Image (cartoon, one colour):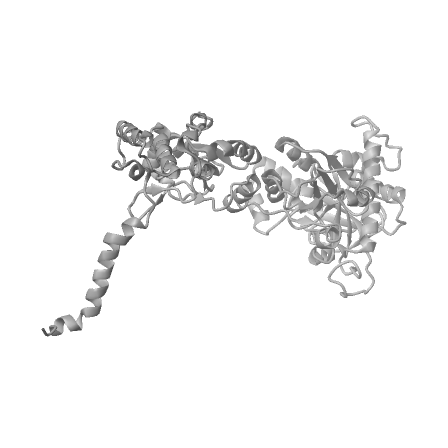
Length: 583
């Protein structure tokens, strides 16, 4: 019999279709392990009563003298019976296909596979009632969930089941995670019994049945900018406290990492490469764990003021850290606040409020850096006011300027000590009772009243700022290396700021037409006088010079000049010349 041409033409697609059909009918159904319902010989999702009847029928066969059923099969039947008669375990299995006691089944099968079934220690799931105890806290409902994701902080959610032994074991870790994330991210829990909410976080099979790919517990997070239920992030890693906390801090909150350094790399890689104006904050850890979120949050919030590093404490290196930084043990915290300044050391661990208080106290170097973004805050900017407030008409700023190096570091130390001496002089006298006969009393009083500020200026980075105040004579102090004089030479000078009394009076009287006329000429509020120091690098001499400048500047009637650009040398009472940004 001849094969029709149409069949010969399409024989390959027909054969493939038939093979696929037979595979789905004969092979595919047997490629998946039988369900617990299949083991008992009942329909899927059968009620508990049906499960009990099936088990009783099968157990009678075990006791028959003709019973030849292997012990392993009997263990499977008993396991299926115990799981499907526990309401919580049956719920998890029916709704999400969860069976988190398989390790028990495997262990019992290995233990009794060569033993008679009567020797099996029943029940198999002895601890299931313990796991069913509700150990959870801060459990969300769908309504509270919508409110929780709308709050300011990110949200980390643990999806759990009351009947899961893995969740029961993880709960202590979960508490630690919550403690370490306190103040950085909120934590909450969702139980599988809230099917609508729990199902929202489940994966979906091709059959549309929800399931949890990695079992329970499952962790999901909502970043700060996520306000919709569908924009959560799923945690992909192992359930370790350090790993979970690091994922939340890095991927969810977006906090910077704080790197570890060794004794060989701390100096050149961290201290040497950090910005000169920043305080160096070093944490010594005895565990090697990643930085806690509150520390990383501080690194972000105080990034303008400080650089942060971690060092792993090793006993064989303890003498090095004691000699160099004064660190006795770990955990500890060290602040390096400038060249020649003694390190500030704290030992122990700190709560967030304590750590924030410590950071606020030590976020500035002993001698702060004058930069374009700090000049207003420091009271060293003609556009602003003194640190004493808006009503102060005259105030001062002492500046040491130069290229970073040994020369500048030495003079910064001297100026810092001069500042400390004035603070000491001011503190030794009651408020408003500094003896004017003392040679440095004017400077001490001004410093105490926030009318005097000590700063240093990086002449290499802020070269325009530096050259402006030093006019044409900036050789060795301003600009990059090789600019002008090859020998670095720092310069010490003082700036006297004076607000325009006429302009202030007009502002107070709200004479808007004249004020607007001034403002139309892009005016600033204060004129500036600059005087340079040419004396010895001795603390007492420097403070006498500063005090004399302030005394003259406060007592002499110095007119408010307009459009005058000269440079001052020597004391104010000897040479009244001004460098002005004026009205």
